[in-house]
Image (cartoon, rainbow, N blue to C red; front, side, top):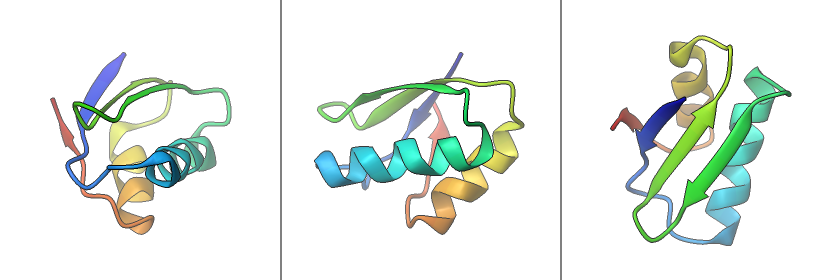
Length: 65
């Protein structure tokens, strides 16, 4: 499980965009988004770099927490 800080994630639309970005890399990934803390916990077998790139493509800079 990887925890990411996603500071620009603030609303339900953001949550959906983050989930969609992760799913584009790994359709079987499990994503738990915490909007209050602006974090996401991701359980995926995909490369972290690929997930970060997909998030960036959606407009979200993410760093490992």
